[in-house]
Structures are given as structure tokens and as C-alpha cells.
Amino acid sequence: MRAEGSSEEVSLPGVGPLPLTEREFILFQALVEREAGIHLGPSKQALLVGRLSRRVRALGLTSFGAYYRFVIARGNEAERVRMLDCLCTNETHFFREPEHFEFLRQRVFPEWMRRVAQGQMARRVRVWSAGCSTGEEPYSLAMALLSHFPPGSGWELEVLATDLSTWALERARQGMWPLEKAVSIPRPMLRTFMLKGVRSQEGWMKAGAELRSVLRFARVNLSDERSWPAGPFELVFCRNVLIYFGAEARAQALSGLLRRLPPTGYLFLGHAESLTGSAEPARCVAPNIYCARAPTAAGQAAP
Ligand SMILES: C[S@@+](CC[C@H](N)C(=O)[O-])C[C@H]1O[C@@H](n2cnc3c(N)ncnc32)[C@H](O)[C@@H]1O
Picture 1 (cartoon, helix red, strand yellow):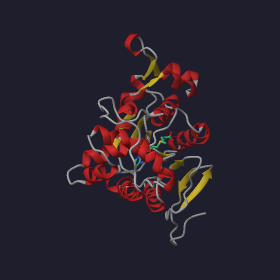
Picture 2 (cartoon, rainbow, N blue to C red; picture 1 turned 45 degrees about the vertical axis):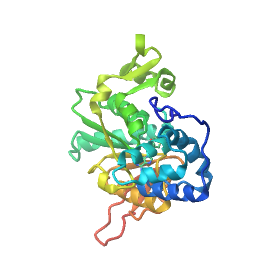
Picture 3 (cartoon, helix red, strand yellow; picture 1 turned 90 degrees about the horizontal axis):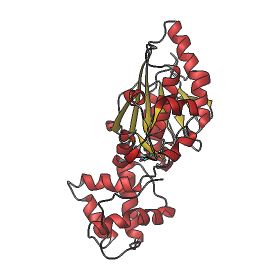
Picture 4 (cartoon, rainbow, N blue to C red; picture 1 turned 60 degrees about the vertical axis):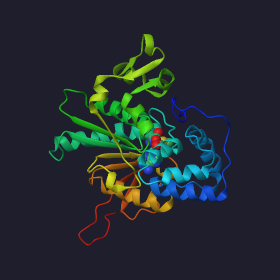
């Protein structure tokens, strides 16, 4: 889905992939896992070459070894950010895994209304889309929320959208997508919340002001909890992100995410992900949807 690199990069003479030695791959493997938690298995050598060769050439370097020395140099944080931008897989679409949005509509939203009516909850909700890519997930969440709790209904909504990739996050912040992306947005929501581009923006759609008003953006590295936002969040969506992580980084991230839920909150993972490895007590309430399980007085997790 993503365009690789950026338009100002000009390839120097010599095109095509650069050679990568086994030793160089091992160095990059360790660097990427250390910086982002992402584990590049042996089958990912071609991916690394494909996504970084152009950047290496654009810098006027002729080998991955030279690029490795450049990228790890002290004070070269910007290049490490750029390298991770190239390596992250940003594929996403609106209302991905629609059953999750159905779960919100059928179970979570009525639950909130009931709790508000019983005086157990304020009309205030914070939601975190962790690993939001180019924004389709957090804007889908904002559409779902605003459809049930429209402006003027007294609900205070916030959708925090975070990602490691500065490239993806900037696209999310812009809130503009090619019109083809509209196919997975339910028609009534499309009409209510999106604007169709005209003239120079022909072929594009843009998030309207209502959607934008509930969204916040930040760069957050899920493998470094020091960069995380403080909770609690009623909903945490972290889908199709931790699947790229090594086992240890994944377990740590999962535990951190569960700790950001209140006892009534939900964590949503991608269809191929589970809580395996996390030390935090949790309960599966629907496929890939979890509740944090508060410990009982005896120190045991409640059933
Ligand atoms: C495949 S996309 C998933 C997007 C969306 N959650 C979805 O399910 O459609 C994975 C996203 O995770 C981000 N990512 C990868 N490693 C990350 C990390 N260590 N911290 C935060 N985000 C990360 C990538 O930049 C990418 O945008």
C-alpha cells in the first residue's frame, strides 16, 4: 500500500538491489529489533534489500555495511527514524475486521449508555489506536463513535492515533485518501463524515471537521513504554502491529496495553494475534477482543 521512500530521493547511478551479506543482515536484524521490537526473520532479507537499497544509494553510499555504520552513528537518530519508516509495513483499510466494529455497536456502546444511566460512568471516552498507520483505523473508530454519540449529545470523545512511522503518521494527520479507499466505509458514514475533493483534489476524499475534532496524533514506539501515553483508555486497538514483533517485545507491549485499560475497557488485536506471552491477567470476550481481568482480594485473577 505504501509508496516507498519519498519524492526528494534521487537515485545515484546504479539501480536495483544492493547486495546484502549474511553478517550485514544479522546487524540490521539486531538493530531493528532493538529500535522497534520488529523481528526480521531470515525470510525478510529480500524485504530489507527491497526497501532500503534506494535509500542507501540516495545517500551516496555503495553498500549496506556503509549504511549500517552511518545509521548507528551517534547523533544520527533522524536516519534511524527514516530507516524504520522504510521498513514498516503500513497496509490498512477503513473498517478492517468489521466484526470488531459490530462488537462496538452491539455490545460496547449500549454498555456505556447503561453505565452512564446508572451513574457509573461519565460521558467521556478515550480510545487509542496504537499502530494507526495512515489513519484508516482511528478515523473508522471516530466515525463509529460519532455515529452513536454525535456532537451535542454531551459525550466528550478522544481518539488518540499513534504510530512509529513518521511518514504514515503525517498521512494520518492530513486525513486525505484516494477515493478508492471509500469502498469499505458504510455509505451513511461516508456521506456524513467525508468530503469529496474537487479541482486539485479530484479523486481524493478528506475527513470533515467533525472527525478531525476528536482525533489527536503522536509518534509512539510500542517497544519503548517510556514513549507511551498515560491511560486509561476505554478501548485500545492494536491490530496487525505486534505480529511483526519478536516474542519478548510483543509480550511486554501486550502487558503495557492491558495495564492501560480500566476494568471495563477492551483491547482489540488483529485476526492472527493473541495474548500469548503476556503476563497480565486478561479474559477473551470475543475473537481477538480482551478485557483486563482485575485481581481479586486474594491476588487471583477473577474468573
Ligand atoms: C500493518 S499496519 C496496521 C495498521 C492498523 N492497525 C490496521 O490494523 O489496519 C502496522 C503499523 O504498525 C506500525 N508499527 C510497527 N512497529 C511499530 C512500533 N514499534 N511502534 C509503533 N508502531 C509500529 C507500522 O508503522 C504500521 O503503520
